[in-house]
Amino acid sequence: MRNRLVLYLILILNLISCGVRKSIKYLPDVQEYSLEIPKVQKINDSTFSFNENYLTKNKQKLWELYIKGNPLQLGYNNGALTQSLMQKQEEIFFSKVEGFVPTKFKQNLLRGFLKWYNRKMYLNVRDDFQAELYGLSQYSSNKYNFIAPKFRRTLYLHGAHDIGHAMQDLMMVGCTSLAVWNENSEDGNLLIGRNFDFYVGDDFAKNKLVEFVEPENGIPYLSVSWPGMIGVVSGMNKEGISVTINAGKSKIPMTAKTPISLVTREILQYAKNIDEAIAIARKRKVFVSESIMVGSANDKKAVIIEVSPKNFGVYDAVNSSRVFCTNHFQSDVYKDDKKNQKHILESHSEYRFEKLQELLTQNKKLNPEKMAAVLRDKSGLKDEKIGYGNEKAINQLLAHHAVIFSPEKKLVWVSSNPYQLGEFVCYDLNEIFSDKRLKNGKFANSSLNIAKDSFSDSKEYQDYEEFKLANENFKIATEGNDHFLTEDFIVHYQSLNPDYWLVYYQAGKYYFKQKKYSKAKIEFEKALTKEVTTVPDKESVKKYLEKTNKHLKNPKY
Image (cartoon, rainbow, N blue to C red; front, side, top):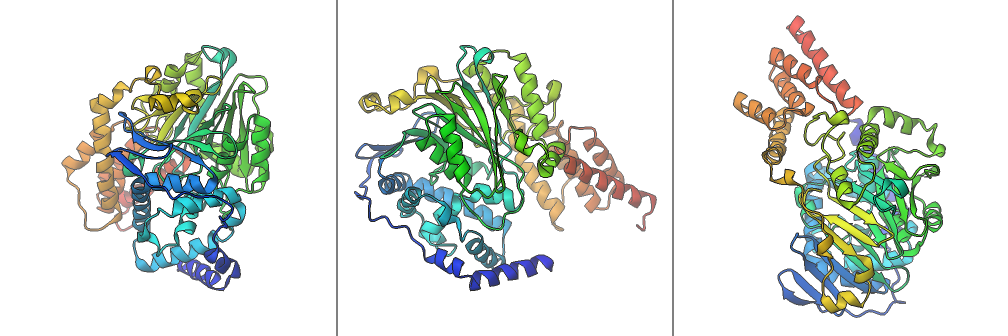
């Protein structure tokens, strides 16, 4: 009842707010930009071009996009070349939202809430980025105009990462990144690796997009994300500035401001060193807590910029030649932050941080191949088996992508499906942003690729993929009243991922719901013998076990 009242209040605010009405009607002024409407030439089913702009799919099934021009032209070129891919991503994303919010009534309330919540976002986005988003939005689907007009909807989607972990604390992003240099890298050069553990389903991750952008003003750069995205979650520019983002613990903000991916995009396009990156990040108003790892060829090191709506810090490992980043803050500014301290104690962030320390003790000097091995590591501390998909692992087997940067050499390696297990494809930015690419027509420097992980061909991997499907059946069975599971199914389900605490917890909840308390007790006790992901998860198992024991002692309970 209380939740419904809150939603009604939000809807009322939406109807009476002049700020909302103004944002609904707003469109950016793009008249200052020249524009040639793209006429895309289809070369084959996976290769398209317009002038010097190009989209192709490589043999590792990564899409590669090269675009250039003024902001408006960039948006149009991007949209025209990726239209079918972009509309597919939009469909996948909004179908997920419909799954979370299944009724029309609640969907109407959600639309009202989004209008109200995002009412100030456009005021916090650069004019040139707005022009680019406008151009891109012209190729969005008409299917979702009922949610919001194209430009506003495209803008909303660039804040989806921020809104997701701020509003519902979904933690769809539990990323890990690290940087090494001097004595910690094989050649002494700066080397950075990152897992982007953003999961909106397997379908969303199928069409990875590696973008090569040559803007009219600023620095050419590479970005790894998905069709329809102009913001940056992982990227590096031609000057050797790299950026990656890791979500932190956030309070629920009252209004959306600058999406973090547009802050990092600005850093890539306009910064040549760490000081310039910090200056850009400091002047932008964000609405979530985020760590931005910035690597710099010119500075020959990496730092972490830690931003939140009310605070700003920089973590600089002054007396060290390595830096790790998971999902908690490390700078002095956040030392006494209660939310950050609680997150360190209760989440899986500190565990992954310690695992990075352990791996770097075992691997004294990293090179790209060894960095890939770190990013692919699935074990717990002291190589303990903690189950596949456990968020305490560096490799949680859900990453949208993994990337390795060598800023001084201007080399980037991008993982191909599945997760970070596929072949890492190497790109040389010095060649791509030169006449050499135009002459040979190729983006990748295949001779430097890193081989796929043999785990992807193993029975354990096949079992894990089957486990994911079986886990969905378990969720339905524990949430609904008309879905029953056989004993054979439960035993098989647990055999697919026997070291993972969740398979016993799920079985325990199912038996509890079926009032089979003796069996539930056994499963909950098994779950507690495994490496449970977070403190709240462990407390949940303990509470179920406590309730189960009460039922066993007193059947009338």
